[in-house]
Length: 149
Image (cartoon, rainbow, N blue to C red; front, side, top):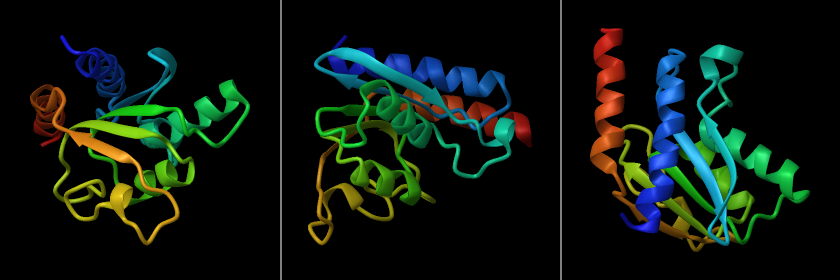
């Protein structure tokens, strides 16, 4: 198992927590110097707040723990390709790197619809890697929505 797979497996644990709480199963973890800094999962339904995506909650926890909003040394692992809102926040937080599992063809803003992390019109670009444990992340999402139908 690679380091990226290890950290993504922790993000998948967070996604399972969301699944168990009837939330869209997306999880995220933040890592700095090969140390876990923060974990989060979607809480939109629980908190009735459209902004309570895993990535945004993760950034808030990082900022609180580290005492700073500039997260230039942080790698974020997200189970599903982040949306426009989350990619914007990741850019504003100036993360170093994003690693995600499965693409989101309808909302994804890292590769699918937009490439916000590499858009040189923005004042910050960051490395984006896709496909780490993508099958596991995708299957969890499919299972969740199958149960909803």
